[in-house]
Image (cartoon, rainbow, N blue to C red; front, side, top):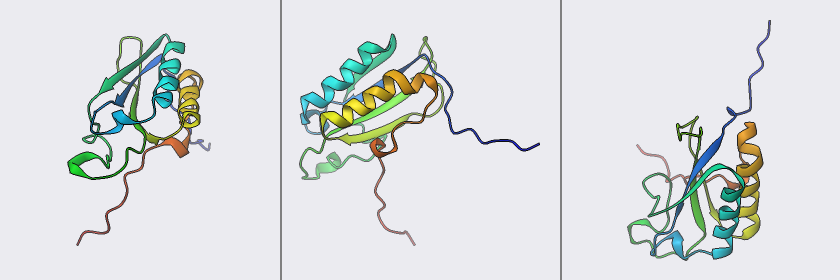
Length: 135
């Protein structure tokens, strides 16, 4: 008998989303983007939005270590979880979210897709840029 590979995630009750609010980092990004994430959190009974410092330890941050780049948007790390905040599966890194439409797409996934076990919108996932090959 052939086994089909599942492309879905475990169903969840909620999430914890950490968004960078560092004054010298993503925190200076568009407030409309952040408001869309707040709205999604209010729609999910077990959703929690946490404002945090730089997420550079968890995902690529162009503002870390004195880089002189324009504030490119919010970076968010989302951990699916149960009602008692027990993690379910891997955390997802998103961003930079540069316009409200991107944040609304993420908000829709948080409110509707995450608890149904759907994968997040791929175009919103944060990708660490390659730095060439090491020898």
